[in-house]
Amino acid sequence: MPLYNKTANHYFSFNLGRIHFLAVNYDWYYNNANNPQIQKDMMDWLHNDLTQATKTRDQRPWIIVLTHRPIYCSYNSLSDLPWKRCY
Image (tube, rainbow, N blue to C red; front, side):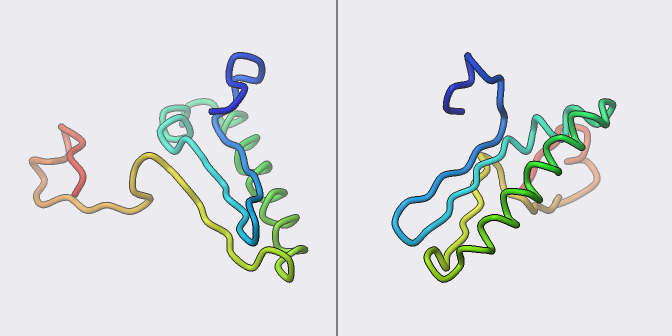
């Protein structure tokens, strides 16, 4: 993540041309399930970022969300669950 050494952020966004990019570390969110404040901060940031991006849809009609893992995945069988294999 940009400026991680200074901000310890796990999410950020930027504009490029007519696109608003939003990047999140989904694993960080998931791995902090026992820390509701971290999850709340991320969701608040996400809500605010998308609210602002929606206000400028005439300038940037495209909003692209990036993660390093799929947002959705499925398991082939219950034996995949302990290994967290995602397809």
